[in-house]
Length: 231
Ligand code: NDP
Image 1 (tube, rainbow, N blue to C red):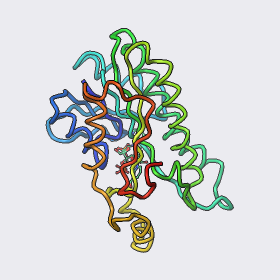
Image 2: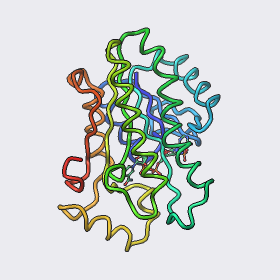
Image 3: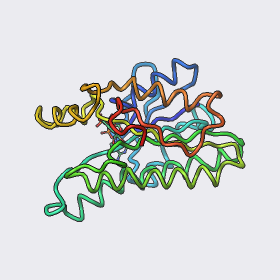
Image 4: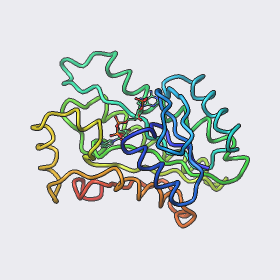
């Protein structure tokens, strides 16, 4: 069974739908606790260890151990370094990077016992390219790469893979919150000149979760219309 954090909307919801279409039982977690139709939604704040533990216990009680984790929950608090408060930096790292650590740590032990598992982390193209006003976000998303690659090494003997997907600009609530000018600047960097859809990311996530992807681990795979040219 699969658990998708931040799975109630945007990229996470598309991942949940794609995994369900591939035949997995799927639960989604978010602070709000809602879910795409027909899926179990649990409340989880990835910035709080107790909340992560409680949500996992709920999911395990319903479906048994989690075999696939999509660590997708993420936030932005963009501003230039000159005005970046320590609080804004910390909050983003606490959710995006430490949140992934809390979720992966809670998921890993049962996976180790089962001797199988898939950890998939949703990073961003900004991890490689940087982004003005996004030093906190880029740091958190770049941190995920080193984190996942370490897990890929640690957990390989237990048949657990850890991979990172790096979306470019994708049409979701997160990018709807940008101004028209900001969106135009983003899409101008994409060779195809358009934003991606959540389903574009979900297709890759579903593949990484599948048995066919068992020999892929420690990978960083962009879904960005060529923006990063593979980096
Ligand atoms: P949205 O803002 O649409 O969704 C974010 C999701 O994360 C929501 O489900 C939200 O649910 C959840 N979330 C946020 N904070 C927490 C928390 N503390 N605990 C649990 N859940 C939380 O974003 P997207 O779908 O666009 O983004 C999904 C991921 O993809 C993020 O990690 C983002 O950084 C990344 N990404 C997005 C890109 C884009 O262009 N859209 C590009 C590159 C990467 P709730 O508010 O109910 O908690």
